[in-house]
Structures are given as structure tokens and as C-alpha cells.
Length: 210
Image (cartoon, rainbow, N blue to C red):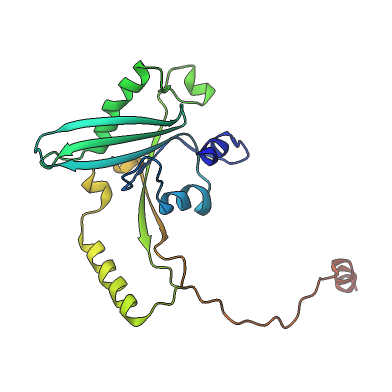
């Protein structure tokens, strides 16, 4: 979790948002999916004041609406597990708004913007939900059977309901981001260097002047 703290404090990285929210399928608190790690640290560093990981656990009881809050890093990294009955529509955007007052009441989170010009007017901090769409890197070479399987997976994904609609997210605050589905099986081309040289720009300018 130290990486999240370090990135959040690194002012050389442009701030992405105040509250950065990811939906996670990881069942254990200690687990952060590789696709989320890639999105935050590798693709484009996303500096935020607070990182949220939301997990939905469906129960056999049809009407249960409960949640657990785990503070992984005080005021910095928060995980919320929603335990919902199978008939409850997972309106995650509204559920998170319902969770916030409890955290504010117990002094676990500051709801106001971290920008001084906005905070002095008690303007609430902005939220951004990142939905990750895993795609196959075109540079990946797979065996024929695996490539067929991935083609089927891609077709099913196009037919299924998108995460932002399935979880009732406000589309104005959602960013859909693609990350590689497979990071291995990438064959490096056997390229040979023909010539490497440093251009003498002073000599070039003198020739141009003549």
C-alpha cells in the first residue's frame, strides 16, 4: 500500500482526481488486481487524494443491503464491500454516496475538495470511476486454440451488459479504460541495428548556411 501513499504525495504527477474509484472482483482485502495496478501505476500514473476499491458480494437472501468498510491506509486507501441480495439492483453510485456520511461522521474521510480554492467554500471533492476493459494486445502471439477462445471471449463481452450500466454508475463520472488481457506471449522481433550515429548539428547548420 506504500505505493499508493507515495503516488498520492508526488506533486510532480498531475492530479487525476480527488476520489479515484475502482470496482474489484478480489475477495480478499490484501489483494489488488493486476489490471488495477497496471491502470494506476503503469499506463498513466493516476494521482488521487483517496483511492477506493469497491467489491460486490451477492447473497442468497433476496433483499439484503449491507456493507463493510475497511480502511487500508487512513484517509488514503479505502475498501468497501457491499453485501447485496440477489434481487437488489447494484446501484453502486448511490450506495457509495450513502456510505460517505458514515465515514465523515467518524472522521475517517474529509468530503471536501482538496483544492484550496474549492475547499474554503466547502465544495465536495470530485469522484471518478474507472471501468477497466481488458483487451488482447495485437502484438501477442497465441496458439490457434487459445486465439479461438479469446475470439469467443471478445464476442461474449460485446453482447453482455457493460459494467457502468450493470452497476448503475453515473456515466458523466466514468472513464472506460483498456488494459492488456495478456502480457506474456509477446514475441520480440529479430531486428538488427544497421547504423547508429549521433548527428553533428553544428556541422549540419554550417552546410545549410552555405
